[in-house]
Image 1: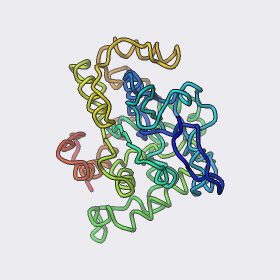
Image 2 (image 1 turned 30 degrees about the vertical axis):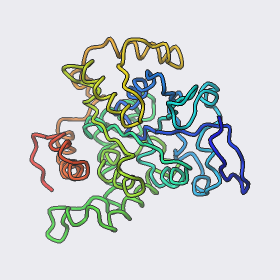
Image 3 (image 1 turned 90 degrees about the horizontal axis):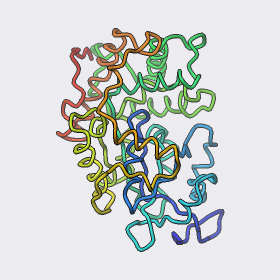
Length: 351
């Protein structure tokens, strides 16, 4: 199926490539892959396999600042099945609602938002949020497992966190909030904060040399990241979910189906209960992952015995709880009463 005439390279062409109707844009280490696997179970949804990092720092900045590069949004190595079977809009005869997952997109807003704004239809965005302290620790473990955080080069997890906080202070994103002349509530949402955030992204996220070894703390500033998206897209086209709505629940199957069907409603497709069937999964590994997930009991990764080098110290976890507390409160104001006290810490905020 065609998706319509789009201006490409100065000419008007018909694209036989299906661009997504929805995207899972973040955040990293908040079960975005699990959400994608659940959504893929719907008979009217097709999700591009894997994570499609089209906004990573490895792509030339200029490429995504031009209106004539919409087609580049979809990478060449996508599966043929996605190309042939998907139809933008979904729930049509012989068509699918097509989606993709790029959990770094929410952070790389300076790259992702400009290209998404020129799409010929309004894309819907899904965001999964997790306790920012647990999220940071989980990503640190992943980086270590992938060999990106060698202790001889980067030090302990605590050292890496301190370095990111230092970077944020260098650009003026984090201040001494206890000082009489610096008030957190006055700074948050100001032009000065926006400029500091843009500088942080430019210096410590966009540059290819930093790779995946940065931003472990900054990625948990959800209020700051979401405000950029809500400023550029209609609020009704953005759905924000709690990590605990899919994971770590006492009544996992019922809660999962309730949550996933909220997403189906948001995407304007019919209700569909998630089952152990994996016949629509794109590959063998995805089949195995979904089967294990649907049969598993609720779990909490922090309950596992972790070696000292695979976790943050208790002192650093408390420091991060203090750091995130006012940002979490701002998130409550942005998203509403449903998020009130979502990550309440037993540590008094000092900001």
